[in-house]
Amino acid sequence: MAENEETRQDGVGGETTLEETHPDFDAEYFERDAEPPKGRRIRRRVIALVAVAVVAVGGFFVVQVANGDEEKPANETGEEVSATDSENEKTDEGQKPEDGDAESEKEEEEETRIPVEVTDVERDTVAAYIAASANLVPDRDVRVIAEAEGRIEKLLVEEGDRVKAGQPLVRLVQDDTRIALQKAKARLANAEQAFERAERMKEQEVISNEEFDLLSMEYRVAQQEVAEAEWALSKRTVRAPFDGQITERFVDLGQNVKLSQELFSLASYDPLVARIYLPEKEVLGLEPGREVSLALAADESIRFSGEIQKISPIVDTATGTVKVTVEATEKPAQVRPGGFVTVRIVRERREGVPVVPRESVIRELNQAHVFVADGSKAAKRPVEVGMEEGEKVEITEGLEPGEKVITAGQGGLKDGDEIKVLEPAQVADFAPEKRSSRKG
Image (cartoon, rainbow, N blue to C red; front, top):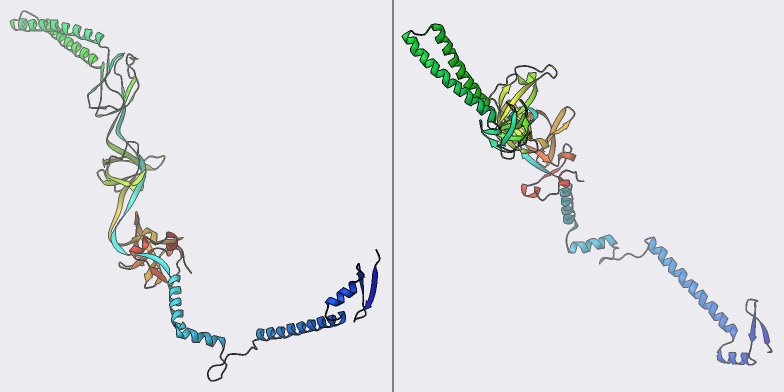
C-alpha cells in the first residue's frame, strides 16, 4: 500500500509528520475544521496563560486570609468589629458567660473534694485481756478396765451411749464365782450355828473360854469368806464409774479378757474444760471462780462464759508457765468437745473513756494519728492510744468526745485536704474504691 507523507513546520520550530492511509485525508480533515491548525494552537496557548493568571490571583487571596489581612466587618458606626466581639454579642443574647463559668468552677470544686465517712468520738468501756488458746476437752476422760479374768458373756452398751454412774457396761461369765459364793454361805451357816451353841454353853459354863474363842473365830472367818465371794461375783459385772458417754469399745462378745485389760473409753462432757498455760507473772492475782470469756475459733461471733476452775500450785520449770483450768459454764449448742477456743481473762477494765473505731487510727512506727473532720477540711491529729478491745480503741490524749473522726476515705488524705462528708444514706451506695482513694 502506498503511503503519502507531509512534513510541516510548527510555530516553535518543531516538525510534525502526518501519516495518511487514505488519499483524501487532508481534504476531509480541513473541511471539518473551521480554522487552520496554526490558529487552533494559538488559541490553546491563550487559554493556558489565562488559567495560570487565575491560579496566581487565587493564591494571593489565600495568603492574605492566612495573614489576617482580610477585611473585618464593621458595626453601625463604621468601626471594625473582631470575630470574638461578634461571638460575645451572640452570647449576650442568651446566657452570660460569667454565670456559666462560675457554675462550672463550682462543679469542678465539688468533684475534687474527697468523699469520707465520719463518726463521733464517744465514751465507752474497754478492757484489757489475758488471751490464750486451747481445746475444749472433757473434765474426766478414762479407760474402763476389767477387774477380773473371764469370758465376756454380755455387752450391755455401745459406742455413743450415755450412761449413769454404776450402770452395767459388760458382764463376764459368773458360774464359778456363783458356786464359790454358795460354798461360802454354807460354811457361814454351819459356823453361825456352832457359834450360837457355844454362846449358850458359855452361859451354862460347860465350855471353856478357849473353845468359845475358837468357834467365834470360825464364825467370823465364814462371814469374810461370804463377803469375798460376793465381791468376786460383783467384779464379773463392769460398771460405769461416773456419768458420761461411751466414746470407744475395745472388746467383743465372747472374748476372754485379762485383769486390767481396757474395755471402754468413757468421757464426761459436762463440764467441758480448757487447760491453758500462762506465764507466771500473768497468773498473779488470779483466783478460782473468776469469770472468763470464751470464743469459738471457728466462728469468733460464738462467745460464751466460763470461770477459772483451778490453778496449778507449781510452775513448769521447762516453760516457766502455770496450768490454769477453765470451765465452760454456759456453752451453746454449736460448741463440741475438742473444739478450739480462745480464752480471755479480764486483767483491767476502764469505764467512760474516749474510744474510736479501730479503722480510724493510722499507725506509723511508734506513732499514731487520726484525721478529724474540721468543717470542709481534714485535720491530721496525733493521738495516744490506750487499751484496745475488739474494734474499739481507747484514746488517752489528742481527742475529745463529740469530735468527728474520719473512718473511711482517710487512706490518701493529707492535712488540710478538702473533704465531702457522706450522709448515712450515701455511704451504702458509694463505691468502696472511691471512699478509699484520693481524687483530683
